Image (tube, rainbow, N blue to C red; front, side, top):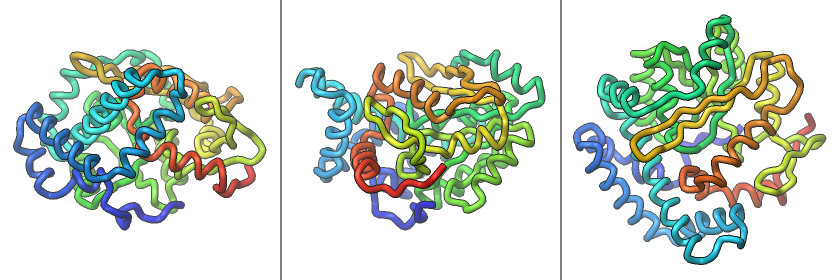
Amino acid sequence: MQSNPLTKRLDLSRFLQKRPNILLAKLLPLSIYRQYLSLLGLFYYGMNGRERKNVSQSLRYVLGHNVNRIAFQSILWKTYLGIFEHYFEKMINAHKNLYEMTGYLNDKISFSGRYWLDQTIAANKGCILVTGHYGAVEYIPLFLASNQYRPSMILRFKTNKLREALVHKSKSVDLELIDADNPNVIFQALNAIKQGRILITLCDEIHSWRPCTKNNTTLFGHNIPKDRTLDILYKRSKAPACFGILRRENSGYDFSVRPLADGNAAGSICEFSWQQLEKHVYASPEQWYQWPSFYPEFSKYMSSMECYDC
């Protein structure tokens, strides 16, 4: 298990989650707050050359050299804006009042793939909903909870203030937050599924992978040891699994859910999930916000990360 992230350096997340920015998230109109956070984000990257290099290097590593310089610069600029949009979504999701946020989400989000999720819930089954650090992922738990679903989400808290705000808000709806740094995280996740809840988990936290020496998978064209965490959850829970993405659209968001496995079928949920996520990343790279850490973590993983037996 990784060390507690609350003790790490002042990265972009902690920089944008300082107390004045929390207060402004509560008070400012959304359009003004979005612009304000974007300006802060540009200032942060302007002062951190190493961080800028990480974003550019990660994009080039995944997109390859088939993208010409002008097109690459356009994608790079949109990627920065996408990263800032993510933190805008994170901050208002945590710090705007519950009534305002649920109204905003239900007005802005269309829900394609609802039928499969409804059928699973109607059968009194829990399920695993896999997603990634893509689009407006921060909104998924609250959106589901506000629509009479019972979500449980595995997540990490970068700051105590964020933890406090989300825990307080979750108490007002049927939303369970599972700390990924808790030693009992697997037990809590399995228990949530057993209770018929929707377990939301992320497949692209590379630093948290539990790699397998016996089986490989392909990630952005590179053959690497497979992460076994999702497959452990699937095999132990025997629950249906689906993949969900909350894409940003011009006038709002689209929450797309599609089945991966029925709980009995063999196969790797890790592989199935990455196949889905890759399609979205290639189609709209600016909506994935793992670029600042992807290449440093992935290259280290390839060269020296310790592998564990399956």
